[in-house]
Length: 196
Image (cartoon, rainbow, N blue to C red; front, side, top):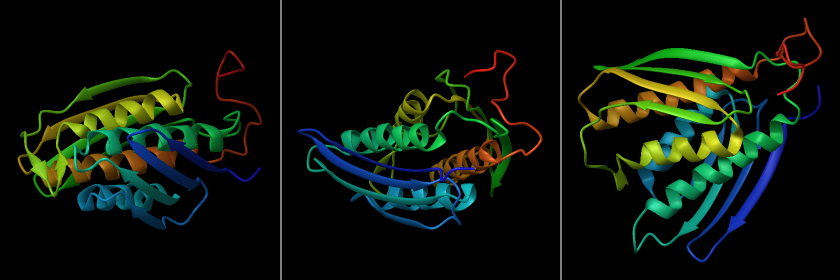
């Protein structure tokens, strides 16, 4: 199979984001967004998905972290889309049930080229290390739309914001890693239509 890699750069008046992605990596990450907790989450996502991920972000953090977080999602999603190519010979779907202490999260996704996010997460409002809790939904919506992923994220239990968010990011990485697995039993795309 071809190398599944991408490099995407996006610059606006609010942010400059650079993402380098290898879907067939070892789970290594170099992340600098200026938001420490967000860096930690992206590193966890890469580790649990066996992705090699580099993210460099400069944003208007003096205003708010919203633009930086959402734009990282947009560019990360674009990198996934580019690295996937025609989505041939992969499992296409992945799901996981991931615990972190009292938090239990389910993530199920389909690399269907049909973006859709179901966010069934009631997390206590507030900040975790400079990261507004509500921005997790915006990040994953941006990833879903740009990558063409049908994505369901559900929280079964949890009280601690850090634990809930970390379980979500790790769960997404794990489910994505499963969906990306190559399957030598077929050559085309896993679809009765023959195309995604």
